[in-house]
Length: 372
Image (cartoon, rainbow, N blue to C red; front, side, top):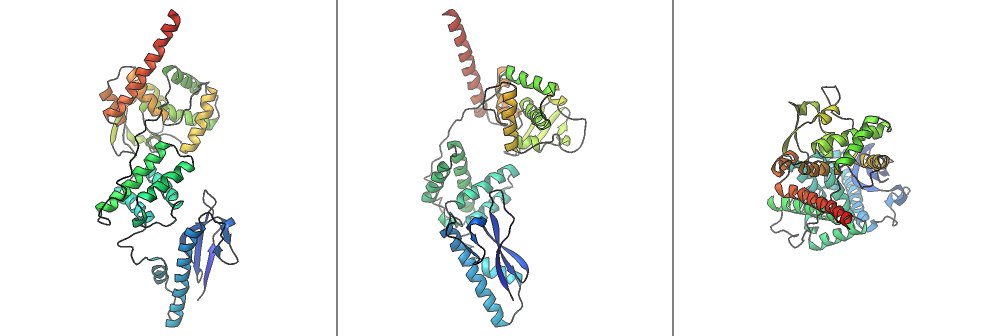
């Protein structure tokens, strides 16, 4: 029998690698990662330079001691190595039934609630944020003080207040899930108040949208910029979110309408296609409607596109949806219809209506200047 500990050289996006037990040539993941700079290969241990040394090393030390004890038990008993027995002995938590690991509970919540993949990605980011406060928290560790520390950590990393509020809502959602499942009796986050912050909704005016249409027709952009502008314009004409556009298939186009279920809200929407939107669709009849890029790449390319079009605004992909909402109201489409097309409530559409009123008031100031 042999037991080795190894940091496998397969870094993730942050450069961290997974720590494995190698049990007679079988690789068994510990679920713990470390950057190679913080790993002592000779001693097979985590260095004190690790930013979360005490938290990470406590859990790793527990697994390591259990693994060594398991090997001794097998040797004394003269029993062959059984991977399932080893994993149960090393990783199972005696009190997991009443006080489960919170990170696993997040995964269970995402799976059982059947969230869209885009929202699941948000929860995966939340898990990483949580680990910066507590590397392996149990459900009972999630309390008022923990939430305050998480908020503080998020602000320290430069997260906007809207982003922090969203993450707090996600944290509360998992806690409420645990409460409904009978794992806890009371809500430990009941005193955590979430601010409702109305952010600035950037959008394109009709003239700016026309400038982008002209730029697209000229076909002078780099191929990747041209493709991003293509599906960005489609969202301006339909109000679809980025997550809905990248998932859009040709079978979702029926009777000259987009008929799909929103990834974020799971709400069905039907949006009639104007001719400009139909012109952006290829002649293909199967597969994805657009060749898309990641949201991050799309936003970076949109910045270049806006500079080329001489549009001095901070435009991200989601601004296409704001453009659809504001221009729809500006051109006289009833608010109730806009709400139905966008799959939102009337209160949300009122925000777009308020923006239009502000634009009108600002434009009327030009008369004052003329009169002066």
